[in-house]
Length: 102
Image 1: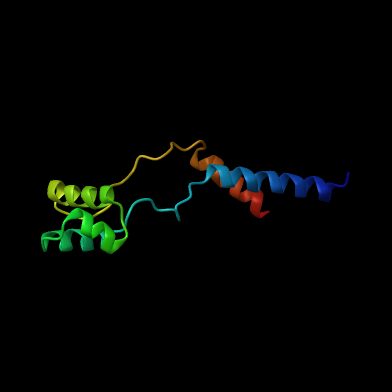
Image 2: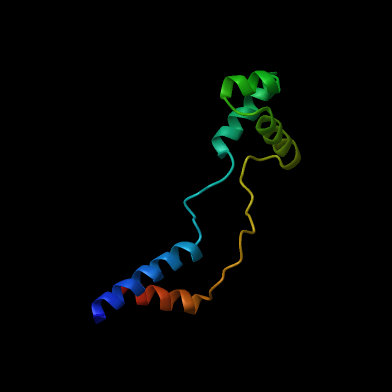
């Protein structure tokens, strides 16, 4: 087995490890602020939850939760989530990135 094939196999393993460990920040759960503001605005114009769900193509639960959130907190913003704790330290992240790049 040549040194190059060993290096390539390790590089593939490291890339798979990074895909598992690094958070997927591009995935965002929940409805957006704009959608929630539309829901609340139309609800304040005397639309019921069921007609709103049919008009905006959301579930009745999503409509109810958006209105309840606005009544409770007075805004449409997303709350920060705790998420999964990191499995590696900053130093380990840096070392892994250096190994992949070089």
